[in-house]
Image (cartoon, rainbow, N blue to C red):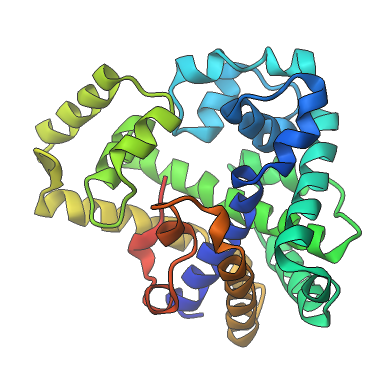
Length: 298
């Protein structure tokens, strides 16, 4: 299995998984429960498979969010909406979002049904040990509708890769904020003015992360050093290595077919990602074809 095919597939399913968090449907589903603030809606959608998880658990498995930011929203969130109801809400939102963005012809197509089956086979090949977010999603019942089943499988694949990524960061002694600072300093990362507030880190916490990386010789000012760039590349290679199992469950032609189809869906829905996030979640065809192991994000 070529790393390029697997990486393109991972990027495509990650982007598909992300779509409901950039559209109104999930907030609409949760609004009757008093869950309206964007990041709380996000936590309700993504953390609900964990059950009544407390703030330390969500902080640990998400990794990239400031502990205080999580604690201000969890577990109070579950006093408004149960995890079980939030799961129903997120599946309904995913279905409604994809129906609106893609149209009935795509939703009802044999190509989408085939993609859902391929994604389910890949997701079934994921490892469970050490993968808490993937395992929590894998324990859920597969939705009956193919387009929602495809989104659910994409979510399992995304969380499998993310769980492995967190393990790799720990191996390289990178905290959540350290990893974000490192990524933002690279030519592949999103701007820090987007990432820092959306993950709840204060300017002091961000600066402390920058200082730790500078003391290790990984950054110089706002840019990665040669050593820092090499470490970031190694983190992404190891993340890809730990994510090889689901794509080995398919032959290479099936992986490429799934990647191309899902990328097409994401490109069709690319307008949901606000600038400059669109170039990261839905890169143009030239950038997408050139994806390699350095393109993962925390």
